[in-house]
Length: 456
Image (cartoon, rainbow, N blue to C red; front, side, top):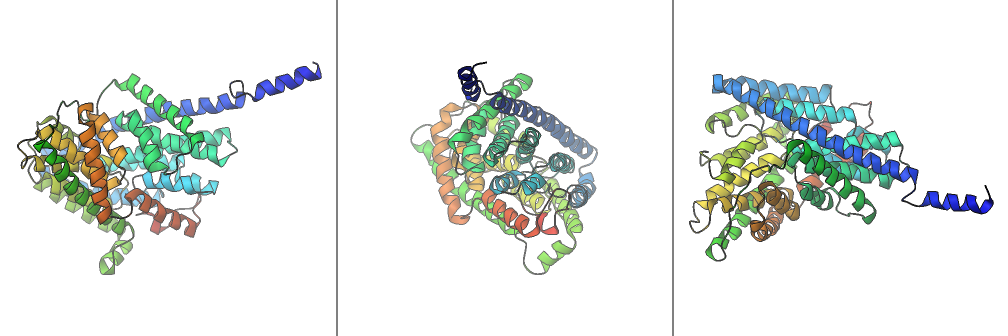
């Protein structure tokens, strides 16, 4: 081969379209996105089975919860500390923290497949015990862990490429968990990475779209909370926007502030007792959870998916105090120290809040006010207003409510900031980062006691 031909050949190989290594990287993203989708679907099915098993036990006697919930929560905390250190929390703060880490060993400690497996197992155990937790946050960490493992197998040389993989995996996890691809993209931009880089945008978009296509192909074009045609007329009905934004922002901000404070530890004898007897404390939280369940006729157990769906459809016979009791059950579940997310419970709490507000607004459709309450409270909790509006819009397939949902979400975000000045996931991620830096966590070294209650 002549020198000129060799030079031309080398130049052609460097073209992105003809680069074998670039195509290998693309395939990694595509394969990873499909794997994330498959795991999310299996996780959702297993979660439904665990929740169903718990409710079958309650059908025998609702008082069985007084034994199942304390034992299940205590076992979950014990397994978290002994078998799966690092699997605590929802998973979203850990993914955010991993994006800021420069030490590959620390990233691997947070996003290992062992931790991901523990997250799934312990979240399922929590649901089987009646805890008010969700699977969507854990799915984010699982998705990021899968992409991290694929990146290690490919031995990507640049930290930016590994970061893009993690970001894509987390976003694909949200897209697959809720069957909401657009929400997955917005979540990656607004929550997982506050400085979304142009060079990572393409891979994130591709991974989210492929995860959405895989979920759609396997599960069909379903909407998480069903389809609603509720609308909000201009005029007196828009009073609902203001009321829901204020109530949801205040309640969501207070909830976030409570969880952040709990993560940093309670003062005095209470904090000392929790530090000394975490498993006993988890059992006491399980007892409180069972009592809340008995007071709510069982409506506070689990993710809240069925309750929120019924509220959106206007077919709910939930007690009027559902909003308050579900809020208390979610706080208790979080404070117990078990793994599990707050996405689905927050949406259910918001739906209950909207139903309550709808009683005072006869000019507005109840279904529309339920959606506004849902987006207001969720925006108040996560302080990511675009994500909140998009995720509720996609989960209910209702584009007619886009403007009211966006307006409510942004107003609730502003109100929430008056109560809780730090976004919950960002605050918990910063605490997690400080704890990791202080303890030099690596894959084969158990996480210190202080890491157990890092994240919501």
